[in-house]
Amino acid sequence: MSGKSFDLNIEKILENWEIRHAVREVIANALDEQLLTGTDQVKIEKCGDAWYIRDFGRGIKYTHLTQNENQEKLESPNVIGRFGIGLKDALATFERQGVLVQIKSKFGTIKTTKTVKHGFGDIVTLHALIEEPEDTEFVGTEFEMRGVEEIEMEAAKQLFLIFSTERVIDTTRFGQVISKKSGPGAIYINGVKVAEESNFLFSYNITLLNAAIKKAINRERSHVGRTAYADSIKKVLLGSTSNEVAEQLSADIAHFHEGTMHDELAWVDVQEHAVKILSTHGKVVMVTAEEAMRNPDMMDEVRNKGMRIITIPENLRAKIANGVDLNGNRLMDLAKFSEDYNESFVFDFVQVSDLTSSERLVFDAIPFIVKIFGGQPNRVKQIRISNTMRPDLMFSSQPVGCWDPSTESIVILRDQLESFSDFSGTLMHELVHAKTSCVDVSRDFETALTKLIGELCELIEATVKENELYEDRLTKLISKLIDPTAPTRLISDSSEKSNQNAEEIKAVKEQFDQRLQNVQSVLSKLQAEKSQSDQRLKDAQGLLAKLQESGTMEKKQSSMLVAELKMAQELLAKANTPIPQNLQKAWYRFW
Image (cartoon, rainbow, N blue to C red; front, side, top):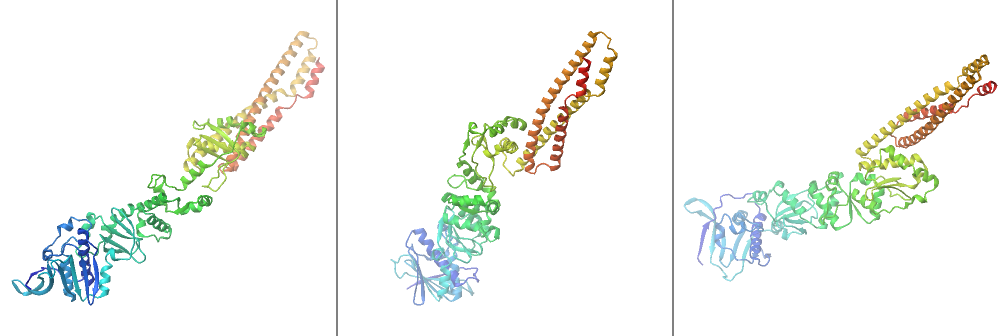
């Protein structure tokens, strides 16, 4: 049988390649042919001391050994090979490692040998020997290799996803997410392992190659860095809709505070996508570790409703706020759960006609309280009383009032009507909520509440000054009325002038009576004004007492206010002193 040979022209020998790397190239070519032709699966088997790798494609020709690039493979995105020189590198490695190789197809049989390079008698290079085909009907290409240990063959096979024991969890347009039992994660490109990641949660098979990956894939198919494939892996994860993938990612997120998360979870976009998948497939609530600790009652309520708690880091909490899942539904964080809970609560409202007389007295003070507040905010349509109040799950407490934007109502618990100060303080609190739309324990709410306290203090101060003015006027008037010298002088003068005209004496009497009547009228008016002022002061003091319970006023200020009130009451008591009897008797003697 005649044959011919030609120089393989291998300029650079890959000295670091082992037999497994050469076998990998043979397997890769077989798998590419299977993919390109859609033929049966590749066979790898051992007979005696020889290993056989066979595909069922079109069959190899010796011209394939002359190519530097394979245009067909370059135009096919999912094949493994692209350089066209992998087979020659494999043949060189086999020759260097002492492995005998024979390649068989319907186009001929190819072997290798070292011989003198044509035209250079002192240079020996690797040549291919091409012989006539043994079987012109032979289907595909078969590699026969002698001198390959089983361990090398198994190592070569493990470089391919198809021969590994790893399971594909999900397939996306960018690639596949693969389960990882133990050890490092494998990075495959079109099914061939190119790298390992010691702290990856999954293994990955990238099937849509971007420019960075194409540039990074070298002749040796190894040492591909993370920078080349990181973006592709992120896209694979973001393209996944698998609940299994999301479950493993979310379970890993829970270890963020321990610092033991896998590297994929360093990407916040991946964290966000994981909770979106979980939210789409099941009833879950995302909370931070701090939220869980601060809201035990709400955590119990979440569990009571059959929902699962997913612990997430703070940066993810901020990112998913008001976000939606894959179906467009709002993600369930603690704020959304609280909103839903509040909306589902049913109040037991009390009609005004059903209030007791004492409750009605306090309830009827609403216009006065609203006036002190500065008027009813436009958004508040009604103020209602309820026998029940929805619990504040966020603060693990039982509120006594709430602003309900959905019904534009302020709702106050009925027991607050037992005390004017309690009721007015609660109403003021909820009026601030309604006016500012700020929540408790927020800077905006605290600022608004502080401003209201200042305005109340200003009102109380004005009331006290007004009382002091009334008291000063009243004291001066009383002093003038009860001057002890006035009756004596009047009687003495009257006695000395007893002989004067009776008409003049009568005129003096009428003038004094009119003066007394005028003073008594003014006194009655001042007493009425004083009574109103006392009531205003008492109401204002009740509001201040409610605010003091929240720790927002100094005790010293309260004590001074009470002292001023007592002083005003003492002065009023003096104002109620009757005219002395000696003055009355003098008049009787005069007449």
